[in-house]
Figure 1 (cartoon, one colour):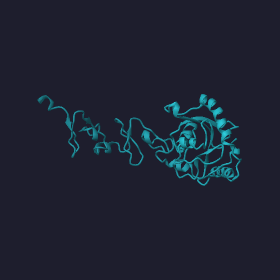
Figure 2 (tube, rainbow, N blue to C red):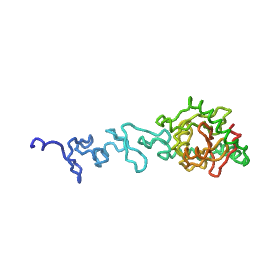
Figure 3 (tube, rainbow, N blue to C red):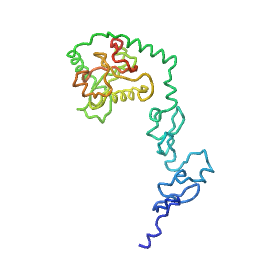
Figure 4 (cartoon, rainbow, N blue to C red):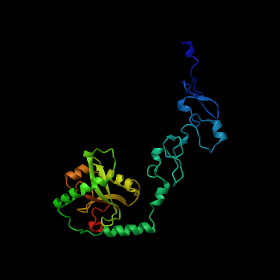
Length: 266
């Protein structure tokens, strides 16, 4: 047993002194530390701080995340191309790190005001076209479903028996203009998750988790009614709010909009 007594070294940090059989040597102060204190800022390395006060540590996983209260590190820099700050993989997207430039982007401008006026003209029609009967809608959806299965895309991890296919009219688009996207979703998903999935697939800016006055919302093509964001796809199918193979409308609206004129999207 005596030959094992010399294995490992004690951490040089006062208050730790933990023995580590695979110790790390700091490249700045040349002292030995355990796994928990191997980085310069973990052991308050004065040599590192004085030699390179503005240089990012380039050791193993030396790139720190700039997001508040996140201590994650990455092997390579992950820099936001908007605010130019470094983040971990979890917070690399603008929405995930609440990018200050994203907030600037959604600040109302003349163009944004013009878009809002257009959307307002759509919602002011409180007498949309009378929806067709559920029987005819269900029949049309069955016919569309067969074609949709050949082209629809979605999360391939969703099993076939759990998939619901929908033709999604994208914001400001119309079926006749081809601004639609055939997608499939899990029947267990909420409408909110469906919206996030559509935005991701179609490359649409999603500001639902920000202070934006307009949110992406999903509407029934048959009735023009808002689909509750917390409802599951399966519950809406059971209520025949829409059908597998049917069409829904994704639009950016304000919170008070509960119905839209579907004629504008045909």
